[in-house]
Image 1 (cartoon, rainbow, N blue to C red):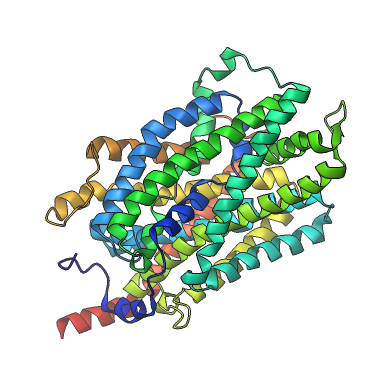
Image 2: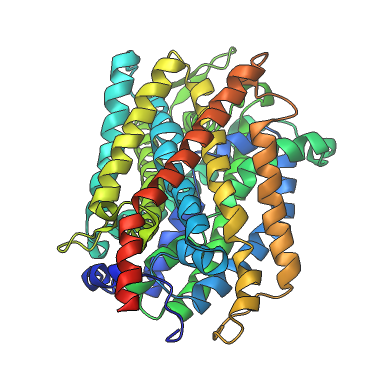
Length: 492
């Protein structure tokens, strides 16, 4: 890498604040926390058993090629900032800067949207109703707890996603054990062979959520210079975390299908409803109308599982923020954004300014969406999740092709890992994310929460996307003084 100088001189002063904090096992658990998102398990189960079939198919045609692609890029260009650096080397600073804003802003949209509402809904389901004012307070507390976790030095902050990975393993493992106990006592929902047959309708509905479940491999590369031996660590972590994530998704989705009637599975409440229902084997009952009441040990275990689920979604947001915020700070220090956002904390080595701005934006998203939806959590969740996925995936439309472009432009750069079938890998990954963006912005069939409201749904996607793109170009314009200084110092 000595011959490649991908970042401006302005970044060199900031990188002195970085410390080697991520070991191989840390990166593996960090990736596991990133990949296994508890907010989308119910959305997959809501489409029935064919969701499991599509999950396997997409593991082969997307998850595996995506792992190959990010492994090659992460080991060939082990520079802090990861996806921003890859995209800049391939397509230039303007494209990379706007692209990076899309990638970064998807995090506050996600945290203030789907993750906050999952946490609030879980609290209401297992503890007590909050009301509109209570939802605002609880959601804001959730957001700013995440801000504080990301603000800590990576030596300390890395333990949050590690704890999140363990919470997922324990929570999902206990759920599966409880499903077996519940099935032995009460039987299961009948699933016919025809339910597993994949359909075009199922493909259109499930691809966005399933691929979103499978992304995150590039995140450790945003902190490459804080990693010990990244060229060995990245492939190791991607392989092990990828296999574990596939298993941790499949089991709970099957469990939900076995215990919750198909007519009652919702994207937001699918996993919550299933967890509450199976816990009745430890104490509680299910009324004929489907209402679940937990008592005794069931109520105690329900409270513990609810806390685990809230911790799980919180750590999802934290793990993505650790990477996305770093990449955005690198972009700003490089002249693709305001220089003030490119500063790292001398004490913690973290991008505090980007972190605080993200918290403020997530808070605005939470308050705005709650008021616009009138507290309708399902509608809020549906629109928020679609927007987060499309924002993230638009950024991938440049990041993924970077591998092929850089092979042509920089053939002499050492590549410890070379992705097999490079053209096919790029076509599959880029094509599937492009398809996802299209069907999310203009779905052939509207989500149930927006039935008959095509205009309202489309505006909920297009308007925020246009605003985010506008911010990307504004950031690039505000980075012009940094670019000018870099040109002057280079000429001198």
